[in-house]
Image (tube, rainbow, N blue to C red; front, top):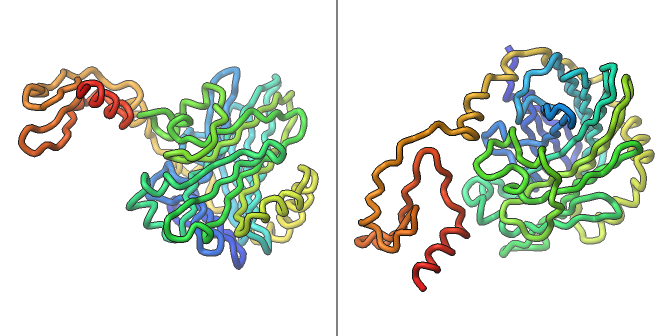
Length: 362
């Protein structure tokens, strides 16, 4: 039986791309963890695929949507991997390459329309950026650590750039770039850097709210950063399209521009990718095909968070709390702030708590 959580490593001497059979993974460059890897099926480098007309969506890997495909298989080599699936007559092929040298990887997404009618398809990438040499900081102090990551978007290169400002050694951390390459008829449809804006508050990662609305194109210092790029195309029957996504680490301020100049067009990326991919393709071995373990039935868990059952309101004993604001107040004995949350209710955001306390105190 397939060990779906066994981690495979594609890499060279300075860059590693880790992944397992369900799609969880992380990127490491020169010992720096560029993306996170927590013990969760929501943690990885993902691509959401959506049929615009029907609203159906899935992911190129089993995680994070765990939508069961019509067919699925995965090949792993020393520096390359291939994941192929078919959903709703759309074949999705994700090829991953770590070159022989360099602090980067390239992912090629190929969409092929196997149906007899035209299809409008959108692809949205998703990466959790951390930029940490000690990844335990991400586990122990995730919220605090994320506050020091800034994001900007390069319109010229269609790339998101992330950097870290940290109190111990700000010049030590690399710049991370997530870039997309398109060719007509594909269209670039925007970007997002804010996890809450992309997923939505209280929603599971496999059902992000942003799949059903335009991306907001936000940048700056985000409390909980994410990297999302979106492209769309209309595929005629039996037509296919390729997207290329390049994830790279840069250890000097001038390196991103130098690296971008190396691949000015999609043709230059494709030529390099094909040449490097073919060198390693003979090492690939098929590790799974239509394995039931990869697509667990997790729909009840999702529906519970999106459509909570009606619950009786518990007795809050609000008279015991000072400055009661409808969901919390101060304990008169310990002076701690306490909240009373119903089972069908989300905790209030920190900004709302502060606003309500300030209003009541005035």
